[in-house]
Image (cartoon, rainbow, N blue to C red; front, side):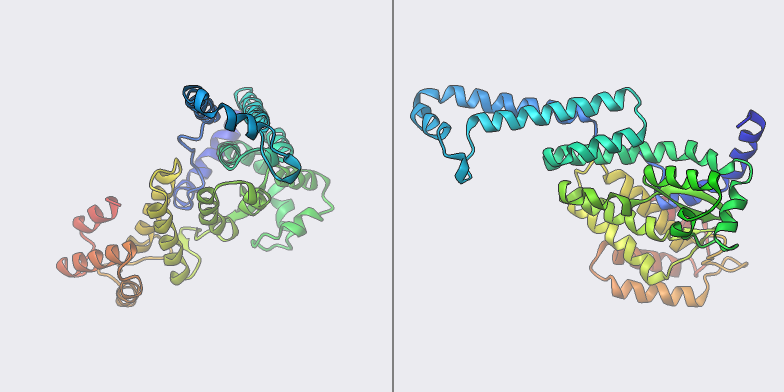
Length: 346
């Protein structure tokens, strides 16, 4: 793509940024570094070795006995444990090499597919989280391919002029150029959505189902949150495109995650996602307004918020809705600077 064309696309794409933030699709994980995992593994092994050495005299007989356990009946020898730790370290180091060398995501997926069964849940989670992070980052560069001459028209034609994307229809297109692009899209675990009439890729969290049995409960819960958005984005074309009931349900699910996993390296990202959702729901967005032209709240929206405050009473979401209703009352249900301040403080 030449610089003039790319600059033009960037201006066009800027209109999507707010939507993408709300969807939580552009993010990176902190605390997910593979080297940190390897350091923890080495530290754990060192601690175990030191503890074993200090008690060697008292446990020599027990250790000798344990080392001769019949593994055919489910026993685990010290040698087996050492071999397992060595295998984990080897997988972690090789994965780190893939990352530091800037390997293509298709190669990274192939490595994960071949090794995830031999990883423990923590290492599996680190690998899956990292490849999601990379996929999210590279999604914007990959989007450039969708600005290539004729691609948008080819997608539209393959979908019969519709904007609801059916990946099966796109896979079966007779357009060779588009067929190759769709195959690459799927191999990178992306799917296509339409945003304001522009077809673009997003991470397909359904494609990560194959890894669910190997990762931690926390990572599964995190993926559940983003799976909802992947299957049906809540905000498109500057409006909420799912029911308010489902939208608030997603917000409540994210609050539960934040309460259950306060130490998660993904905590800040889910909190940011929820903050954006709350601002959209309570403050409104172009095609889903909350306040009328005189800045007064729509009566039906007020009644809806009151109903949800009752439904989620006792939950953090319910507390926020109650606080918002109290503020609205004090401001005579007018959108004021205090309302803006409330919305910005999530």
